[in-house]
Image (cartoon, rainbow, N blue to C red; front, side):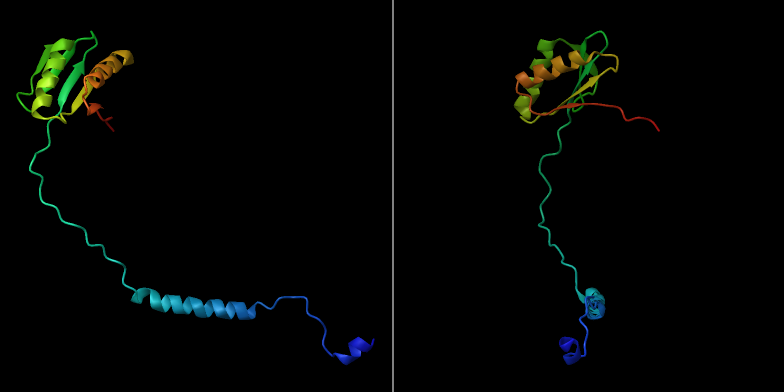
Length: 141
């Protein structure tokens, strides 16, 4: 009883959040005023000249359903000719002498077994053809 009489106050067991709200509103106003004044960073990109070498047209190897190989050189005539595996490798070696990074794309009929395409890819990789890709037709909408 004596303690209650001496201090006329009661203990508060709640947090007063009003000062925190005031501080947050002041910070929000400061950020809203200063944000439009800040200039975004600009990046100065380096400049390069044009490359001297035009892109190399890839050799196109077609695998038909009867497991025959056809080669099309788009940089020359663009006509397909039937080749054996040895003729294919010889033609690719000849092109690689002129352009060491000669790309080769494989176009296979959709009914060709996956194994036949992998055999051609494996053969090209064994003979150090660095850029081998697969040619596909986009789906029509």
